[in-house]
Length: 108
Image 1: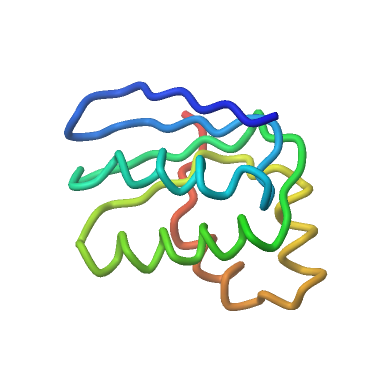
Image 2: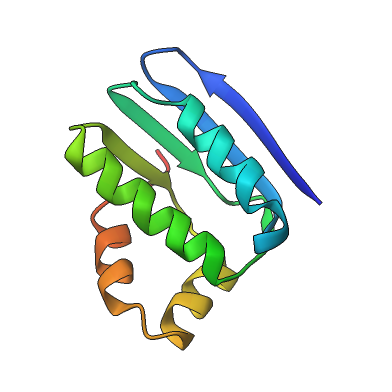
């Protein structure tokens, strides 16, 4: 199961992705993320996600690159879920981990 909620404003949306961030839901996740552009700032909350796979890592990598290319400020709301960090480490995605770390927004 996958759920997505949109909050924030049109100029600075907050997207919350919950439950399964897996290949089964890849198209839905991609469509939800595309809806956020051409925002100038985007916050992504993954704290309610339960599992992820490499397809989500690829989507996340593409999202970061797209945000950088379009000069969109992308912030991943901390803390990131353990399953995501563990998966990135397991598949050797150290470059992605580095990219993610530059986009983390600590809770206030």
